[in-house]
Image (cartoon, rainbow, N blue to C red; front, top):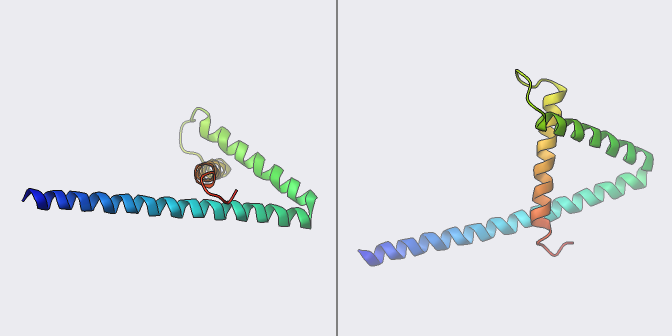
Amino acid sequence: MGVRRAAKGVGEFLVETVGEAVAEVILSLLACALLGCLALIAYLSWSLSPRFTIAGAELLSLLLAHGAWQTFRTPAKGRRRGLAALTAVGFTVTAMTALLLLLYSTGCDCL
């Protein structure tokens, strides 16, 4: 009975370890692909129109700054509505994506 329990424990450990390694590889590949797509988008938009690229980057920065302000300020009574909720969600998603890029794309050889 002790041998079966030990074999089952070792098997579960191996499955968990292999699953984590596969998930790490998949996340690294996704981060590298996302980084490559962002670089391609920046290159193509700059080659089409540098003025619109700068204007778009400024608008995106403004929306993200508003979202950060909405996220980190003292919450007012009630829920956020409209633009405040949209920019807060946009900031949160962008921050998580940047964290994913920072953590996983630095570990791959695509840089």
